Image 1 (cartoon, helix red, strand yellow):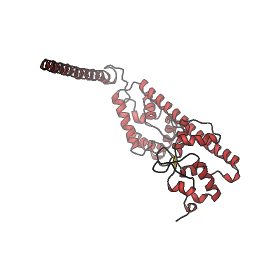
Image 2 (cartoon, one colour; image 1 turned 120 degrees about the vertical axis):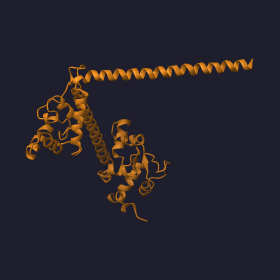
Image 3 (tube, helix red, strand yellow; image 1 turned 90 degrees about the horizontal axis):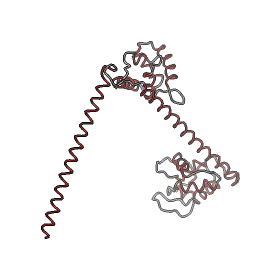
Image 4 (spheres, one colour; image 1 turned 45 degrees about the vertical axis):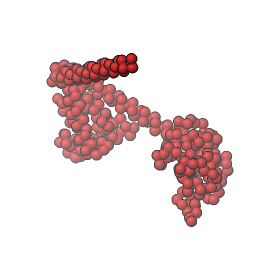
Length: 296
């Protein structure tokens, strides 16, 4: 039977380190792979039985080691370490978390090092969430700009098709895809298209690294007729929809008519259901009266 130290993770630790980490993990009252409480905290025993702890259990250890955090953030921390997707912190994942710490330096030094590692991971999670929130805000602003342009549905459909054509060249849409689009739409030479693509992506991107153009950003720069993007909208293709025949070739009014027709259809369906409910209520009342009459 192979020793724990022969296995990938175990081999990185000395006998003293394995005992220290096993004991630390054991203080959180782990369960085995079947969800049953485990007895003992032997390193090999914890690994063999796929020991794990919940975020709530891990929070207890984190606080003991001096990290002031919440169960919500600890759950995110566990999810960040979780390689199985089960929402638990397994012993192997715990070892990855503490791998850079050396308990031989002393308990106080270990606590400081572990605390710094956990706080570093928490900071990384917070930074990712802040970046994601900022990106979503930029997407909302792009969508608002497209709505403010009041483009006709036919124009939106046209631009969406054009973006799908860019996606066909590769996902996500970046310089290479925009350059190919410039060659397709603007009949530009390869070098000219590539130079132009860098400028267009830089101007349109709402990503942190400004290297790609999402659909919302593409629609915004086209709707706003941003310089360089005319190859996709060609001016006359951008049509405003001001809810009348004078804008969008009647598209706005036709959409109103279609919406009204749909409302009429929905009302007819609702009325039919109300009529059927009334008939059913009458039938049930008749049955009740018949039962009462039979009992008398």
